[in-house]
Amino acid sequence: MQGLTFRTDQDFEEICCYLMRDWVARNMRYDVQFRRYGTLLHKSLLFQR
Image (cartoon, rainbow, N blue to C red; front, side, top):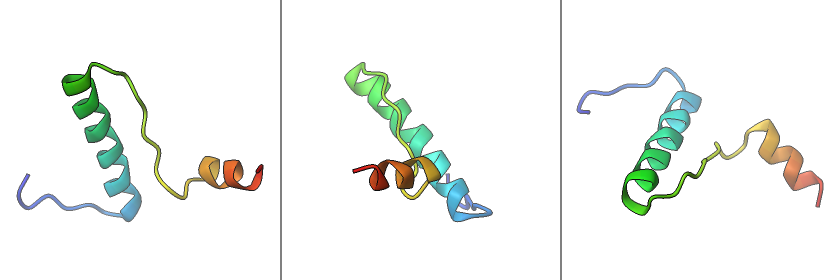
């Protein structure tokens, strides 16, 4: 993965979510989903409280 570059911060966050989901699935045997911090869904959930 040396020399890996991303066009935007969002691209980096997306790949991190994918890699973390894969790592948890392989090592812990759980199917979880990670979301990017600051997405519209996350912001809307914060304002509902």
